[in-house]
Image 1 (cartoon, helix red, strand yellow):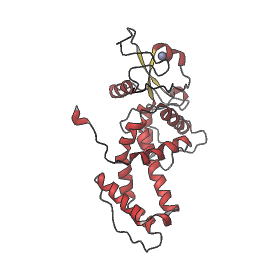
Image 2 (tube, helix red, strand yellow):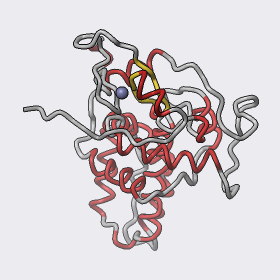
Image 3 (cartoon, rainbow, N blue to C red):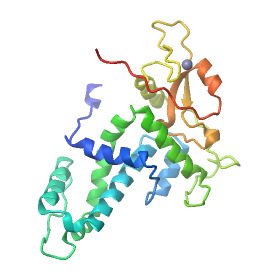
Image 4 (spheres, helix red, strand yellow):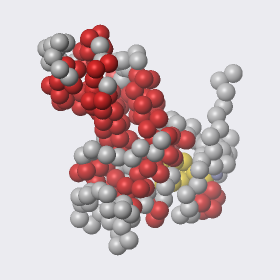
Length: 254
Ligand SMILES: [Zn+2]
């Protein structure tokens, strides 16, 4: 089991994390993303989750814009820092950088597009590990997803797999796999996210736990691991197909 433990490779991960958090906070939706991967991840539980897709495209779009718009302000040592980060993740970027050329940093970025994509894909699981714990973030993220699934203004062209949608455009229900239940149970520490009732059976003999969609499928929610939460039977019934914010309580360590 311990061989499955992953190492945080990059010490400065919170810089990337804050870009993703801010992006969700400011309701920056999905753009310039792989629609096929999105359709697959939204309709069936996938270990490369919709959050992974959001993280990788958001970071790429953010830095692409930085290099495009503020390229003049990007100094040599920043390029060196990127090269260092990539090396930490076993990526070998093109290191030719002509600092006297016009748009030098953008030229360098464009030479390394694939390496940047690769870097953000490798960083993503580390960010997901942190963000999966943040219920407030997940709720807002799932609201952003709702807009893509609903697609009221026909902004997207998602290639939905045949038979994956209902007539009203909502996503069909899929059985929640064991690995998702396991992760959600441990994240929510065996407690109902609404009333905080213990569902572990340790201090409460009624241990009916329900795995509930944060944004219900009927409200254009997804079959994504990041859209599942643990609830008790009563709260689950009371919630039904409504969208309800979970409680953001935590227990202090001391
Ligand atoms: Zn409850």
